[in-house]
Image 1 (tube, rainbow, N blue to C red):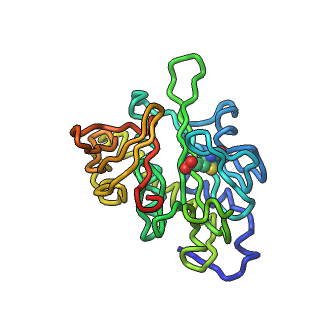
Image 2: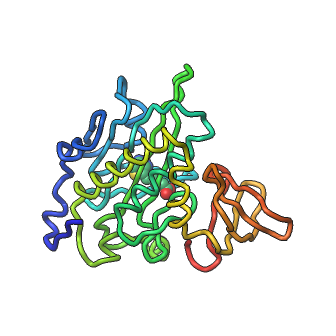
Length: 263
Ligand code: BTN
């Protein structure tokens, strides 16, 4: 991956033309927007497999209703728009595909189930997948990917949980190149997934999943409990073990925290 010492170059805008070389649909580029997920939801006549990308988001959103800090020039803030012919239960697997794509593009990274990409046990990338309902029966899915690329500092409350490629390596990175690598990996994996289902990616995911083998806190609406994360199901769900036996955990329902640190 190309890294640079000159910060002015790093803060140069993403080049949508270069990105479009690996995007089957359109690339929608924004200097500033509320949220690329929001843009992808509102935009009309978007071709399947399009990408929305912004330099800065004013209301970036994360999982479980959290905010996602999306400063100009410091990260990749993008959303992939898809119209997959798959059942609604399989949509969460697209989130896992995005996690693997980011992890393939960031050497040495691991994945905290379901899809936070980690360096040094801290989050370098997060993914928010949303479905769009237009009242008909179509499947429109938006896979929002945020990557902390050149962030030099996080607010104190995030500093033990979040990192960036810059903080990990001491170098600034070319965001166009990294976004292009992620998107290229995503569409490769997506085609495999459409053909062969989750089994096509389960092995790689299981190998990269930092959550497995750990004691975790499972935080759901109704309860909090400690369990051991033991496996990934054939559909990408987390299998946990407590004294009561094994149980399958679905990503839409819970937040998982390691007992020792973030992952
Ligand atoms: C998470 O909580 O881990 C998910 C973070 C997802 C952030 C990305 S940035 C691009 C897209 N637009 C958003 O508002 N959110 C996603």
